[in-house]
Image 1 (cartoon, rainbow, N blue to C red):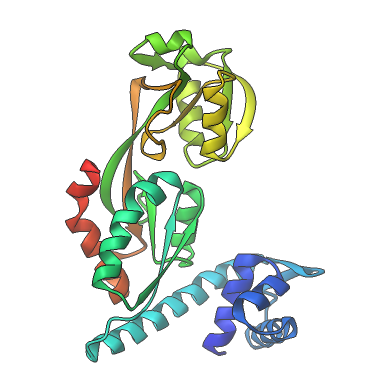
Image 2 (image 1 turned 90 degrees about the horizontal axis):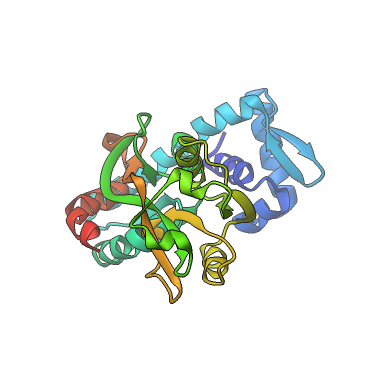
Length: 293
């Protein structure tokens, strides 16, 4: 078993395609297949279910992927420790973000400060919805991630408090209110999102038995804002994910208010690589600035 085989295993599990894994790794598709066959032979189990060029993890493959990712993280940490002994901070840091709230509000400021302090560390950022970010952390696919609290399975560093708000056309009757109750959304033309805040929005509406008339199901914030601006529907979104309200759009608090605490998380803060430790330390120092920003 080699680290190269484990890396191929991890990348293939992530992409689910032999051809895409080969492209990302810079090797041939047959090279990917050969490495996986060798690893399966050595371990004595099937790691993937193959259907043409696509693949999905077997049950045992999913369990072993966690071990493989852990070994790859430890290898990266070991190399970083060695570089630090020579006075050089370098390596790769993988961070997961759950979209506009963390990617637009938190990461730009943190990344600017981090890259100034650690110019030789390559930071790789991937976006997914909240629940997937947590899964990636548990699977050791990323070392750090932004999560919504509470999250008992991870070590967390609270950073900012966000809240869900109603997004309304300025001419809508509900815009005259200072706060919008869940019952106010009942039967209203509504934009539903599959983004990470979706489950929180559903819980808020369900608390009053409110059933909006879902006219649109959209993923992109810009698309949602366009329909609201034209008066086609209303929606609910995380305030930190939203821009300043454009002309013809207003934001209103919910009643009762629905706050979300956003944190930086890791599987274990005491087991992080030097690059990840530096990022957490910087985030800890910048918490007040992030709240103000």
